[in-house]
Image (cartoon, rainbow, N blue to C red):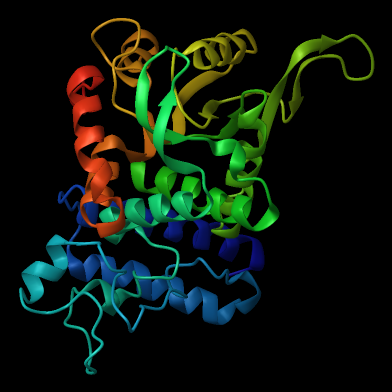
Length: 333
């Protein structure tokens, strides 16, 4: 097999493996047997041995499990691990091989959490946001005039390392969601860096997607227009920080359709799961209005678990619960 054919097949195998990880570990609805999964992983390993220059650090073959186990406060549970041995820890720190079907047996665990540990993945994202002071607890007022005990400001991911890590979390959320897209789009202004960081993280995992963003004002010289970067085409995923009133999404959808492309969905960092203009959440309103999925790295449900698992944050639990009771909605409402 030539280099070009090998590169194509490697991309296909990585995408298939990610898809089946999601089906098995996240939604507990596998499409293939363990034997077939092992065949796919074995084929990928063989091709990467034959073409070592095509190996990437994020390839499923390169992941290594943490010997220390999952981080404190997380309680990851996977069907495959549980069915193999209910008493077996997710990271076999005590030595010995992981049981067949255990996530560690396939190299699923990694320093950057994978879809096999979706709860762990989301909790690590919230811990990351808290460490960067992006996630804060106190007394704040939202744009809608609501008094909230927590605040999320993605603008404080403002250095190279934090943006690199953030892009990886966005990429993980997208790969775990199963949403198909051909291109990324970042609405001005926060979405610009978010889309770029996500594109870089996806490229590191063998998914090289074009990306573009818009200007607030049309340019009447040079290349002109309002779209910068790749020409909008195919299925375009919108990347933003949060959805509040949905204005940014609406403008992005209109622009994408005007250019002859199709919106594939919206990828955000945090779903606050609270009412928007009506009784539904802002996220649910976007889904209903435009008929596209919205994928979040973490939700308010994840945040409440995060608070409950951290003694230093538990004093905010009652306030967040009360805020949710006043403004919150169910996950799909």
